[in-house]
Image (cartoon, rainbow, N blue to C red; front, side):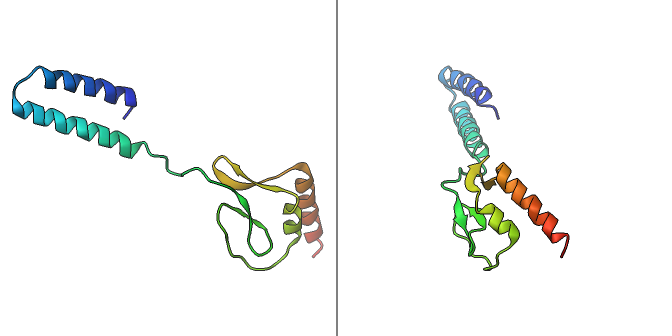
Length: 116
């Protein structure tokens, strides 16, 4: 639910709560307020917490991650291209910041692999 809608409902419920002497209405209003607040708190959490620090990992430094990762110790043409790139947090994901030199290198790897 929208925070503004919840605030309006809480104000309305508090108004009813303040101007009545019926204990059952007090109980119902209290339960509704608790329900609305809990619903807002649990449904508005961020799914992915922000990534802390992204760094190069894996045996050959070919993986960009926010936690250490084990990988096979292989080396490819593409891995040598990635060496010149930075591992960064982009849109809350650890990704390689690909520059023009890296793109040229990757295209050269594709060209070379055509002859194998």
